[in-house]
Length: 481
Ligand code: HEC
Ligand code: HEC
View: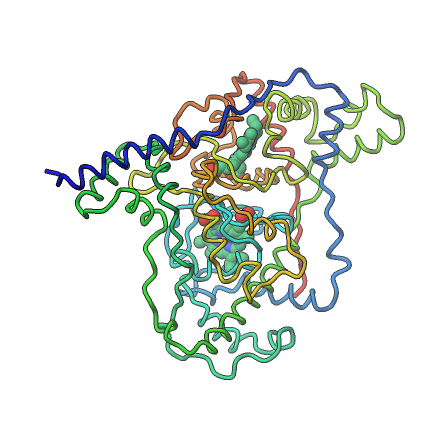
């Protein structure tokens, strides 16, 4: 029998959950007006907004940046940076697959729960990881190294490897390495602070869990441990707190030195990653032609057809009209990288039965608490990026963020399947079918109100797919070093 005190708590929670759930649903949102057929002019504007022009970097890179990229590239491909000597960044981010791995979820030291995102054009990003828990490429690069399932390495081991294999290159860029490094091979530092969401967010998440079995399990665990269900949910979504390690007990000055080396490792890797770019997709070649024709002839109905190139023809153009028009994809996949850099809940149903990923809600807290964020002492930003400015104003209590993930770029989808944050969609058509029906309750939180079922027929879905494929081009990256 449930002790009375606890039964009362459960009732209290249920009421709280319901109140929170309803009060948090956003006030009546304007339903997206299903657009009328698009004018030729509107299509042209969209094309011009989506055309990819990289800021010129490579050719003007100075000596220091070239040295930094060279070092970063070596780190990126170095398998010694792992517990078993088998895993490098490139294990999962393979250049020939547009820096992904073709797997449902990534495999390093062990199998992770997430799909490997592409790194193409990542210089433009503001937040990294599906939940945006890093606010710079530099900070991001530190995550996988200390993730037990990925590299399974530690920052002390990184510093030790740099001292043995990269001393000269490192010191030319960053100055002297610490005179003495810990020799204890067991040292590991807890990777990220244990960031738990608030009771209110947890109550909302609990009330909106799509998987009822998991919901029951949370209640049962709470009962057996005489805890509040919200407490169980908060703890399980934040992951187990990492135990104290020998590194924690080391003098502050030594921790500081190691963290500085670790941050510099991130700087080098990030500089290399910024060189990874896509070029010459059929869409961009078509868009270049449209721009040229526009200059020469002014607006004219035949312009678009006369701008076709191999890989971008009538089907792709129809797809584009659907993407911008009735499909409303540009609500989130906008601009030349096809992302608004924001986080949305697109209504993916629960697959896991024993945990829930709160997505952006958790990611915001981790980003804010990270000692390597843009406001910390290791990776401060001289001119704060958009993400860094946002860090100050994160809406950590927003219901919209619960179960939301980053809008991914749609560049080079040809190489980056399976799709979705957990790789649940084997083929592009599978995710389009999801948008077509939006039939299931999401794993947690609520599906973004602006997202409406497409109700496209097969031919329309096919056109949309053709457009998406036309956004794939060749991949270039820093070849020196
Ligand atoms: C075991 C496979 C694996 C390894 C090894 C790995 N990654 Fe990743 N990478 C992933 C996965 C999976 C994600 C998404 C994880 C998440 O969001 O929780 C990711 C995310 C990223 C992102 C964020 C991209 C975005 O758009 O948000 C970057 C950048 C990145 N990795 C770079 C690196 C670098 C640099 C290294 C080496 C230091 C590395 N990765 C090692 C699998 C891997
Ligand atoms: C409300 C914002 C929003 C709208 C509108 C939207 N998307 Fe998405 N899209 C996302 C987010 C967020 C994800 C990642 C979701 C996840 O994995 O949890 C995503 C994922 C995708 C992916 C998978 C990419 C990958 O690398 O895994 C494709 C393809 C895609 N969307 C295409 C479309 C198309 C086509 C449309 C229009 C019919 C569309 N999206 C409308 C936000 C949106």
